[in-house]
Image 1: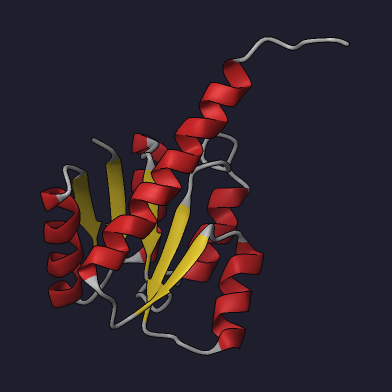
Image 2: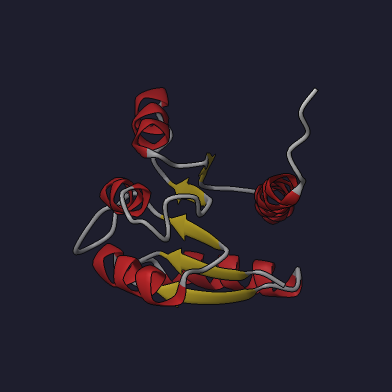
Length: 136
């Protein structure tokens, strides 16, 4: 079970994502604006953060930039889940530090696959870091 923060100001979208990921076995906290999401992420250090691009207070791209500059959160995977569908928007989010980008509308099964893959990659990285160094 992963601890996930989802920042989304659309209540219907938030409910769909929360229910989908909870059905997949994860704990999901929904937050309605970017600034609060950043504060909660700093306090809770979640396993994964999901951000909408357009939110009150602070947009998702700015939130991910600040996450990447935070000493405890910089390696936390961040999924941008947004209605912005242009290649330019995707590039901006990825260059800001998003780990992946998923466009709305989305297939709930695809969301689960993307989230599970991101979490698996983090776990593999942690296991690799624990391996002893070998010199040849």
